Image (cartoon, rainbow, N blue to C red):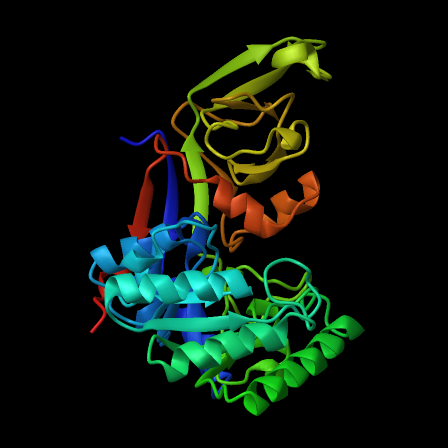
Length: 377
């Protein structure tokens, strides 16, 4: 008998990727960083490949190496590297690596020499996000160094890429400005002898709303898991994660009873309280105190009082609720129950953060569907 669990619908992941694959002529890189946005990196990666993804994207070298150790030999891009990382391990494993600066090009050259094979490199241009990537002023020097290293047979410039600021707000003119800056950067690359096979800038939102940004490769992340990057739009995506727990205890309490730490909630009348064994150590935001929606007994309830480390309390009135009944914090919402978007709204965050929180080792992930059993060719 389980107490609390996170269920992952792998067929939903597969189908979400297939939906996006059908909407583009570009190849699809499924982003599986952050342990697959809380869904489990390896099962999610396999399900995404079953849906037609041909690339996998991760932030760190360690994530990329984990994919390789699991036998996934499709193209993998890892893009976030601090100085001094053992990038030669990534080169040896055939992982594509990103360079956002002149010093990082130098590190990749050294990594390739140490690994005794050319490094597959994606050069990143900052088109306005002001995070990673070379500025327009730095770009020519980065290109020149990469072109020389490529001519020497030390690196292979596989891609040129960038990342959007606000493509989740369709119509935002900054997206158009970034696309123009990206086109300019590609033109400079061409003049300096860099002709990458893959040009990529489209994240989930741009994959779904900006076909003019697809180029050769799109990089959906949150949409892979069925959550929309654009508020108010679903695009036919199906959420893959459901978080739920069995009620641990119920009790009748009188009117005016304070509930949970600090008595931030008081009962208005005699009522039944239901104790649900999930808390902020499991991923429930503490900011959802007196706000988080939970489906129990066929009705939406609201967390009563403060979210604790291990548990939350629900005020269910006179409804028939018993220990062992299932309380669903969020899921696909088919039965009118809450979704990750609902939780994001009440705590003032984004759906990305809600699902990535649920990675606690004491709350097992349970996988439904067959898609995650697919092995990469």
